[in-house]
Amino acid sequence: MTRLSIIIPIYKVEDYVERCLSSLLNQNLDHDQYEIICINDGSPDRSGEIVKNLMKSFSNIHIIEQENKGVSIARNNGIDIATGKYLLFIDPDDFIEANTLQRVLDKADKMDCQVSFLGFTVISECGQVIEQRFYEKLKDRLCRGIEAYPLSRANDRRDPDRMVAVLFRRDFFEHHKLRYLAGVPYLEDGELIARILCVADRCIFDGRPFYFRTIRKGSATISSLFYSERAINGFLKSATNLADFKKNPVLKQEQKDFLNQAICKFVVLYITSSHVPFGFKKIKKAKARLNKAGLSKLDLTSVDLEYRILGHLYNFSVVLLIIYQFVLFRLHHICKISRFRLKKVLRTKPKDC
View 1 (cartoon, rainbow, N blue to C red):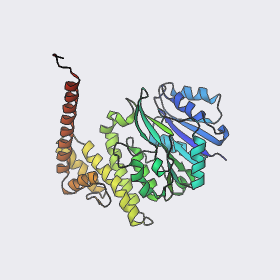
View 2: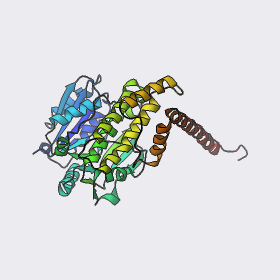
View 3: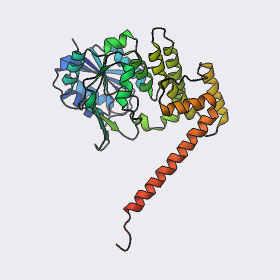
View 4: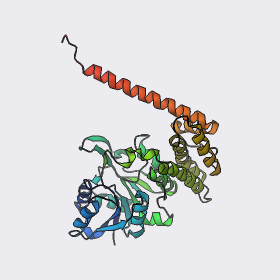
C-alpha cells in the first residue's frame, strides 16, 4: 500500500524545484511506499522539463499537465489521483529535512490522527533562518481541530493560515469532501484549513524539525496579487463558502463559533482590499455584495481581539472600518520610517570619535 502522496503545484520555479524533489527523494523510506505528484500548472519556464528528467530515474515521481488554472485547482487535481494513506502538500520552492518521512508517518500511524502539524523553519532565499517552530512542548498532545488551530499558531499572526508542514489522512479528506475552493487565488489555504480543523477531532504535533519554508520575492504571498480583482472576489467567495459551511446542522455550536474567525477575516480582507482609500462608491458596492451573501452582520463569538475590533467596526459602519485601517496603515508606515532613521543614527559614529 502507498503510505504517502506528496502533492506539489509547479509554476515558474525552475530555480527551486530540483532542490525540493531531491529533498523528498533523500529519505529513509522505500520509494515504492510514497508517490510524488507534480502538477505543472502551465509553467512557461523549464520547471516541467526538470521534473520529467528526474522521472527517468525515479518511478515514484508523476506529473500532471494542465493549463494555468492556479494552485487551488492544481492541488485538487493532485488529491483526486492520490493513492496514499496520507497527503502532504509542499510548495516547490520549499524542501524537507533528510530522512524524516518515515518518522512522521510512523507517529501518525501510532496516534491514529487525521491531522499532524510538523515542525518548520522559515528561511530567506540565501538560506538565513528567520523563524523556527517545532512544537516540542506539544509533541504528546492529542486534540480536536478547533483546539489545535491556536496551538499551531502560538497566537502569532505572522504565521499565516497554511496547508504546508501539515500531514493529513486522505480518507478524512474524502469522508468530508474536503477540497480547495476554486476561484480563490490568494490565501486559499485559510479557507480550507478552517473547514478541515472545524471537523477534525484527532490532531497531533510532531515536535521535531521537518519542513523548510522559503520566503522569496515574486512568491504569491508577497506579490501584488492581493490587490487584484481575482483576489478580491476570492475573499468574498471564501467568506460566503465558510458561512454556508457553518449552516451544516451536523456541526456543534463550538464548531460554528470556531468558523467565525475565518469568516470575519475574509470579510475584512474583502472590504479593505476592494477599494482605493476613501473610494466610497467601491465600498458601497462591496457592502451590497456582502449583504446579498447574508453577511451584513458578523457573529464575533470566539473571534480573537484584533479581528473582533475590526468586526465590530464593520458591523457599525464599513466606512469607519476603512478609516480605522487607513489610520493604522499610516501609523505603521510612520513608525517603520522612524525605526529606520533611528537605526541609521545609531550606526553613525560621531565625528569627534
